[in-house]
Length: 384
Ligand code: PMP
Image (tube, rainbow, N blue to C red; front, side):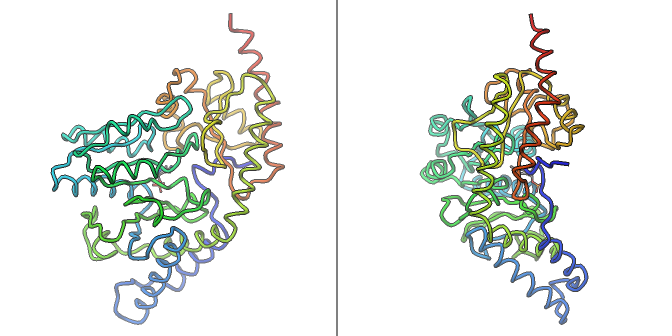
């Protein structure tokens, strides 16, 4: 099988598996216990915090471990809103292509009387900065955007938005989930106040992530309790946290080489696919994108059909967000880019990872040629 669904999740690396296993076997005491076993767990936790912080370019004290990016995003949105409200700010500004869970939460808050603005994107998937300039004003509590979109890989102008947010006195949150392992990460140089990350997109375990909170920022906790300096209650998921640290260190070790490799695979994949037929369309080619993500459609062949044919030919991929795949709803991201429903329902995503080989890419292109081009020809003939 050729796995081209790394934006949905990645295979845990050997280093992460080993640390998770070691932690389960030897570091299972509660880091809050005062006995020696608890204190050993506590030291491992402190050490892991430093390791993850070094990967993210933040301080250890700025890291709050969470169950993943969804929780971190909730904490940022709800906490940022609560902090803003004390200063009379009751507006949230998000992009229209955020993760579905984030948009659902924003929708819920809107129902509760919070003003929510969704920043539009252009046809190439890039954010409409002029709209951001208009909408980010003195009543905004928080601006929240993805660092890069999980479906198209298109990058958001985070630095420019952070400047606008800062000028308006609003907090800036970046859902950096899809950036980890695919770009150099430096929270301290990003201009943002809050970052969400998730280990399983980085060859780490699932169910563990973090919210980076700029030093000095105090947001109310979602889960009350003593842990994580009262910012996130609940016994720490030490195996997950150690697996996260191991995956982060492993990613940092070869990041430069991995980025070059991903870029080369992307070039090959897109050139190969575009050469197959003029009906192959790749989204966002002209703008800054993640080096591992190719969002495309073959005419208006339905994504579900395309994906099942590809799977039979040995290629695993997704349409849109994995979380909404399987439904017949067109991708909200493609709709936001102005695509009509039939095209939005045709979009699929191929996402590579550092273990993907050139041979995998050649075989994926061959699979599209043999399994899908005949369908495309039939569809063209059927069109009057
Ligand atoms: N944000 C983005 C951009 C994502 O791609 C994902 C994963 N699909 C999430 C948030 C949710 O992450 P998690 O699975 O860790 O909750």
